[in-house]
Length: 161
View 1 (tube, rainbow, N blue to C red):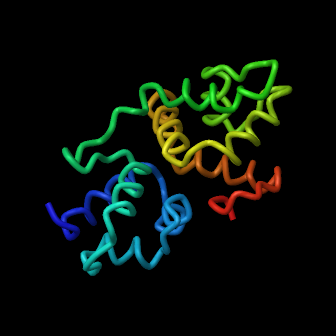
View 2 (cartoon, rainbow, N blue to C red):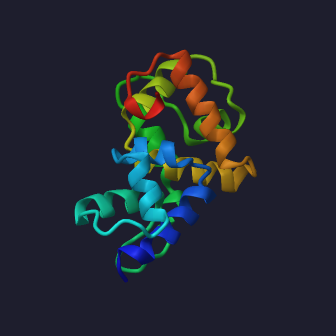
C-alpha cells in the first residue's frame, strides 16, 4: 500500500462518519487542502506520524486497513473521560441519548463541555459512530448537535470553530 491507496479509504471513512474535509482537517491538525489532495491522489508525501494520526481519527489501521472496532466501547471510554472531575458520573446511556437527541440531561452540562473540550478526537469519532449504529441517527446529525453545544458553551477547542 502507498499514499495513493490511502485517499479513497480516508474519504470513504470520513463520509461514513459524517465528517466534512474541513472538520476532519480540524480534528487532525492538517489543512483542508492536504485532506483534499490526499483523497484525490494528488499528495506525494504526508509523513508517517501524520498518516497514523489521521487514520486513527477515522478508525483505520495502517497494518490491515480495516475499520477499528473501537466503537464498541467508545461510549464507556468517553463517559469515563468526562466524569473524572465530577462527583456525579455521566453514564454511557446518558451520553448516548444526549448525542442522539441533542438534548443534554439535567446537571450534565459540565460533563458535555468537558467532552467537547478535552476528549481525544478518536474517542469523539468512535463515540459518534457507536451512537449512530445504536440509534440509527446519522453521524452528521450527531456532529451537528456537538457543534451547536460547542458554540453554546463557547468551547475554546479549535476543532469546533
